[in-house]
Image: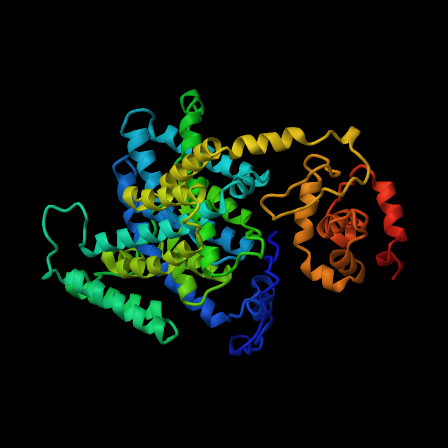
Length: 547
């Protein structure tokens, strides 16, 4: 059912981390499915990262059901349902995608459901659950037909980088507020507050251990902070184990809930945009992006969000979002989906350990949010701040996220600013002029390549070349990505370095030659443009095809 994850070509196994030999068939299966050796990691590292990922998100599981309690759902049942939904979502995400990304109950969706739908008397609780279920189904449908991937591709690169940095500011803001440092506070910072000193000590301790490359730096710091926080608050657990309390909630698909399409799309957009930003931020911080900036098999993460959201709605739990604390696993050395599977297993097990988790004070992981925020801010160096078209939307996205404590709000604001500037700066008119100036495929000139030049990947100048709309541009972009194939194939290497003749640009010659290759050599169906036969004859007479 699940396929092994796609491994980026630049990842190679090396160093002492890959020296661990398989001990059993179980380890061999884990290594083959998750690519432990190919990612330069091992089983103990992934287990340690999974435990740290679970501890960083466990308190969120216990606090978000308090919001649903106001809507009439039992707190114990909501905690159990949220843990069950989170475990299912983490299993789907980890096994399918192969990325160290976990899912967790979201505060924003809970507020939307509890206060926006139920307490406002717009819908009953059963009807609101129907809206949540339809939102989960819509996410699965969008993932199945690759609509989420298209949404990711149209997002400007500078905006993606600002999402990463903005998520770091949001994490740091929440961490400071949990530590007792609030921007909108009527009182001054109380230096005598022991919670502030515990979090400051934990922050400096974690930074020191990470500087010296200590194994389990984040995990050990988190455990020490938990013990100190429990000692300061005096909240030691009275018991450790209890029976899970689960409440099945059957949704009533009445016309009132079916007609709430605006609420369904609002909840779906909140989950999708937050997921797109967090996934890009987490994979980029772990250096798991492909050379083209793509995230392979990321659809399984959204499948996990959709399935987990449906399970949560049926069991009294919360809608799921991508856990921004997944950077904790990356800081611990986690690089594969095994981290998410371990975290999901612990969430499942924790349905019986609820009293132990409830004894952990809420601000225990505040230092961790600040520590991860410092690392995510490094992405701002790659933004072109001298170009207003890129800098202004990026800065708006970067600023709105911590001000509203909402990643999706920052993404909406940045996308809107980027769309407006796309029109006001004249880029829209240039784009439309370029699209309307392309000749139709029936009236294309044959082999008029003298004016075909590609100045860059972003702004090709086509001139009067053979350009079937929507085809040759794709072929040209694909040609740029076949560096390894150029060196392996003498024909392609000759065409790229010399060109077929003076009338062909090097890249355009390669793009045309690629259309002559069989499908099994390129890994996908190829479109052939007009003039194919004449191009074929000229290539047959060229020195490149006589090797």
